[in-house]
Length: 217
Ligand code: E4P
Image (cartoon, rainbow, N blue to C red):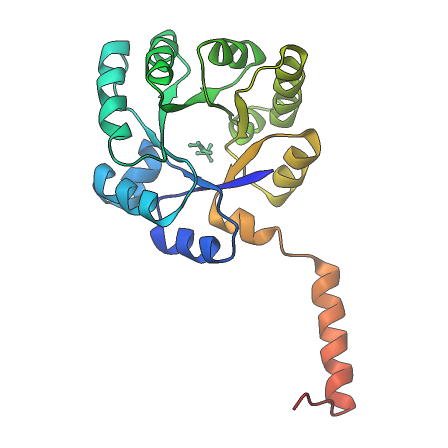
């Protein structure tokens, strides 16, 4: 499973990128707003840092305007994936922008039917939101399973980009289901390294090393 980082924090991206943990980056208007930076500038900086796809989202809602914004975003760098919302106009924009050779990430997906439409419109990535479904007492991981089944049934090449990931558990479950990509905030990716037995075991090893005066010199 590929790891995308769901942030516009360039320092956090750099730290994970140095460890080989970054296969791509996703942003959205809320993330860009949080960064306090100009969307074109910060997106260009991220594109220069990482080799993989960097999603940058349109803010228009009508297809023609989305297409115009998407073309402008795509000019930032070769590794831009234009992100459009899963609306009827977003699907029209997806069809045109993907037809022009751009990577397109169709976002705000909450059903298998929506994912099916995005694949038929030529999406490179479909972004189903796990956490936001969990927030309303639905099962976000079940949606990832459903889309995996639908895409495998018909051999769609659109990649499942599991999004709105809130926990390390979401990451392992997505990997077990077979999501192609998972995008998560840096803190969630780092939390994947944690285990209470690792901490307990290390404390015991260090205590024994101290008692035995073990020194590696
Ligand atoms: C990714 O593309 C989405 O923008 C992101 O994962 C949304 O996450 P949230 O529901 O935690 O805001």
